[in-house]
Length: 311
Image (cartoon, rainbow, N blue to C red; front, side, top):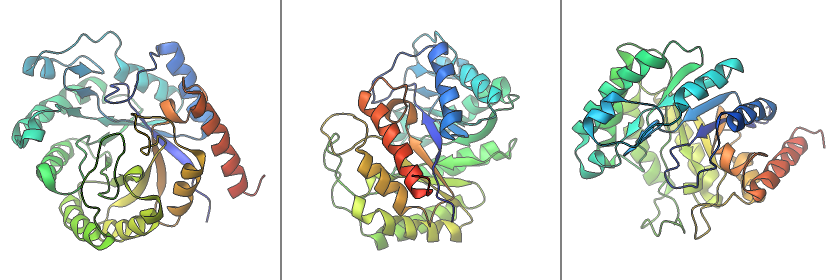
């Protein structure tokens, strides 16, 4: 079996809980060139709007709430850079950060229905627009996530057959930066919960990539194996979202220790079709403002050389 390297990354310029690198078009052009050098063929805009912040102008959101000015259309910039390099871009929807957290899920869905049509009318003709990302991430079926994601996926399917990606998280550890999450669920409990969710997603969601940093390192392989079995039963292809930041620190968030990255990449190999990361540009890029991210990239390349027998 060919060793699976990281071939996709999220793009997070809404910077919800990580520092901005304050990059402009020139820095992003350099970064997309680095994606090609690193073997990354897929980028996922994790969200194109969050609360009052937008990656591109949206009349839909502006009519709904007050928003901050958009100085650079990052959606257009990323699509153009991706198209020039034959990189696939998955478009992330809008996250209000409000309605669905208050169980007002129908408002979240209706807002996103209008938003996704507005955005697709504007950007859908780009040759790089090759998928969708549903940004409402949860641990299980709480917060009406099945209703939210199936409603949005069905809306997308009325006009687009492009693949749809979700990236939930495991109920598997304590996050030092965010505080305790409560009791850890067993592999069996996790499998039962996600069999139900995957059944609801069947025929709508194409790919699922669990956030691996939300699992205990020693439990990750068993959890991934159980998830792969449940996903396969529903016809959903499993990816892995390798978090290249470290949840074991008390700050949000430094780059990951390279040994953790190597372990997480190793153990998912038999179970996933593709490995993506959150998120290359901040935590794994040789262009990152974090020196430790630059070092992590070198250690990652060393690890790939060993696994591919060239070192």
